[in-house]
Picture 1 (spheres, rainbow, N blue to C red):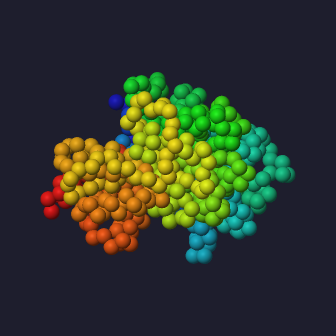
Picture 2: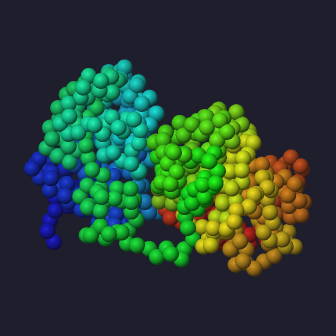
Length: 591
């Protein structure tokens, strides 16, 4: 086997021993390495392929980890991980017990800041640069790499606005490829689109207006030009921005041509780039597709319905409505706060806004949920996608906090359907008009019902239901799709265990809960969210309020951050897999 340059590189110190002439060859090897591992192990592909040359140049010119490098979001950090001591572990990426798919401080001192959500890098690097100055270190470099989609976020502008009135020694590398996960949108995107390699900024340059020294645009795949420019920027003090133009998916033809699909393509042929197709024709649809198709179905009949997403039209499946009814479906970019308040503004005018947003991203708009929606009791419909444990993306992306952080908000309805049909019924009910806001949470992945396109029915708000009524002294109370796990566990045991499903976490069906507490000695609550302040806590609160003394066992996500693995592996860890639920039932059936 031919010896490669990459085989001799474990850390950036090894990289810096190479001659400049060898770096293009290293870039090719590194690109092939990423392609071949991700082809079989899956993960984020396109973003990492687009920054191969930049990653090499940054670690070649700067004295990492003494110089501090932050990757915004972290989708593009695979080459960084490979060059910073994790090459031999890279095949474990995003797997249980393996390395994280995102930069993580506890994993390496080269990962200077933990990321996963967008637009945090500028604020973080500015904080680091100010801290260095206060400690008397004027030579340390501080670099943030941020994409054109992320820099359009409000938080990024807050960081730019502050940095521009400091003398912080910081460099922002704007990696401009006109796409995030979906194509970039907005006025800033239009502004950046005009900037090509060799373009000379005019007097109205938006970056210079914020007191940054602006450099570029330059070709982000030209190693020599990158090295020359970065070396020059090392000696320039104060806040500065280097604008580079790159191609997401660079080096893999299909990834360049279909950048949305190849952001995270699943398994594919490393040589041809062809995605290894799965036979999904006989499988139930993904929950986000049920949402997307149902919303379009409702919107065709009701002209007041609006769809809103912050930068996730494909992932959330709002794309179906955007394609057919573009004047009523909006991708607002990475702007969760704006998305929520935009929906609130529409609600004041009698529109019916469906704000579809991942649970982990909804956290970023918490003040807007409280202040702009719930306090004014506006009927915004939050479609909370990726609720619960999401698998390989890990702790930054698990949607396990929404039950707790939404249930404590006055006026807010919180619902968790057990299956696709119940999701459709909830969406239909919300579309008819509510007097208050509602959050409908549903998980990542597929449901259980193939023939899901049934006639929709209105759901009575705040009602639970009995799925299985037996004579035992133990009952299961579940919410959301874990009703299916609980039902399977009961079937395996074949015991006379009662099972109740609560689609509505808030308002709770207190009448039914009181009946359950009166009838059963032992109650097991099951949820795919945090136990602290979650669904089980609400059941305990009812028991305490009405002086019931049933033994209540709460199953859910423990009071710790859960890291990456398959959803089934994480269910096992949290004790909410079918097998773990069965064990809990058996243990408490005979106590």
